[in-house]
Image 1 (cartoon, rainbow, N blue to C red):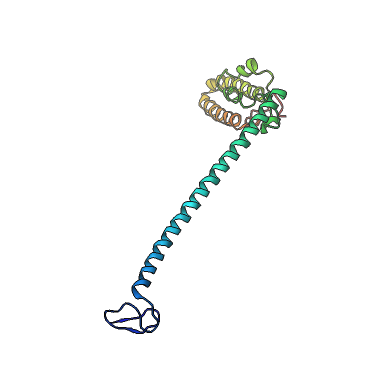
Image 2: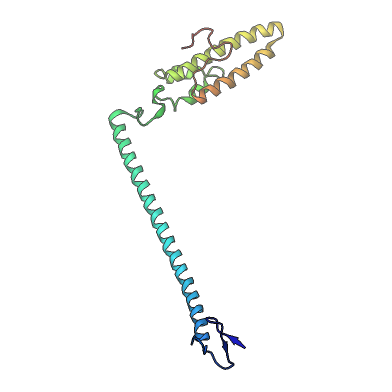
Length: 193
């Protein structure tokens, strides 16, 4: 026993068409199956198109970023050729002394024993490295005098602990790009700016 899906009328056995409305039940099912398959194909086609559009947009954005980078690099090189390698426009830290980045290592080494002399020899025009060299000189003088006096009174271990603290503090300041005096001893011979 079957009933029409369109009008609900009874369809006698052996018939596929509704006698009331004339709709073919098998044809309707085939149409529904075909339309579902068509809908899946349309959905898949739409997804492919969206994926292609997305890939094209990403490729366009990459090309645009590459073009902007190339233009900025060309301007930077042109400016570098005209004004030198440390122009303020392209180096945000250009307010600091010339060669600031490359002399951080020498500034850091200034706090280790007698290596404070390196910036005085190699970076005479770099005020950042010279500042840390002066702080290293102060550290060297104070700890040398402290160890001599400490040995006389048996307190040289305190001087060694303070020396380690000052070395760590000074190297930290140099690596961070700070021009801060060492605690307690930084302004003994040279006044802070």
